[in-house]
View 1 (cartoon, rainbow, N blue to C red):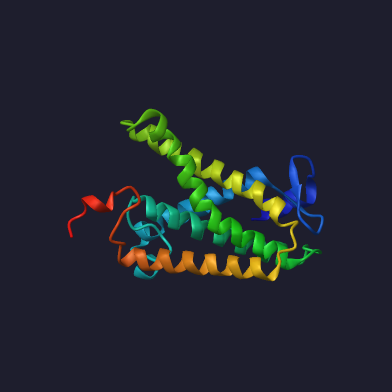
View 2: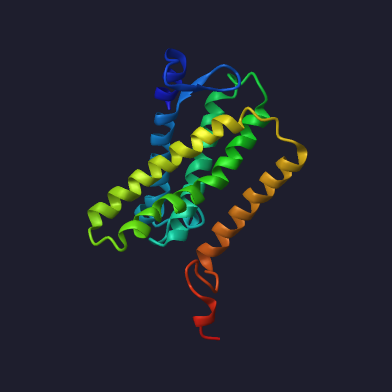
Length: 197
């Protein structure tokens, strides 16, 4: 994180400016998102600590990866806020609500981007290629969302939009926690007519 602060102080080229005139390197932030994603990917697996289950991946399902992305981005946003809160001279609300939107958005950007591979190539037999694709998708999705975030943090969110963002974050939290312990009766790609009653 000190690298992030140093980058804010030293450089201006290739960076997107924050409301208060600061800048963060979007490529560095996307890489830090990849790291926080990995933290949530392996956190429970490495430690076995039960309290990490609602936040960390517990298996390799698509849903668990969406959960890792949500919590990974939320953690990165919290760290970013703690490091930059004194430097944000504009609206802190803009900063916070743009990060809330990003945390809700990033899992779905990962989903859309990752499924390009199966749509184009079908099933990939190489584990190495699949892992490489997953890492690239996670990084690129972070980059896409950060780019959008830099535009949305310029927006003065109205009360109705703020309420919607809070509701979407709350729904995300509830679903990621509840479905960690009790999966829904239907999966994303399952035709409900084929399920046993």
